[in-house]
Length: 173
Image (cartoon, rainbow, N blue to C red):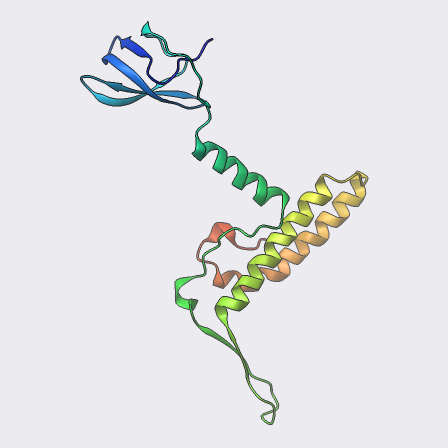
């Protein structure tokens, strides 16, 4: 199937006369005289009045950016944005020793939060590297169990997550 380029003119049974104004990997964006902008599947039936060369990239910038973001998150230690629960934003974490002669340590929660998220993301990267490694299956299972236990130990910090989907999950035992 040959793709139409931007500027191609078509006639559609439902929408009438239109001009292709954008092409993505899955759709033509067509501006119709009567109905304005509509998206049509690349394989949708319509009459081609005048075809222009497809000299444009058929993948949109959004699709490239989305794919690149997914690849970076999956294969690197690039940290994704994980929101802190609103009630803790700009708060302070106080560590008070039992010995009153010792000083109290205050840490901005945002700093602590950043370190928790980095820890979680690096655990995920380690998990992916283990899964794609040349280790035998039993070694992979053993290491996965350790990682699951680490996640379980970190569930204490789930109270800080704004979204339940991003929280630590252990083995549930």
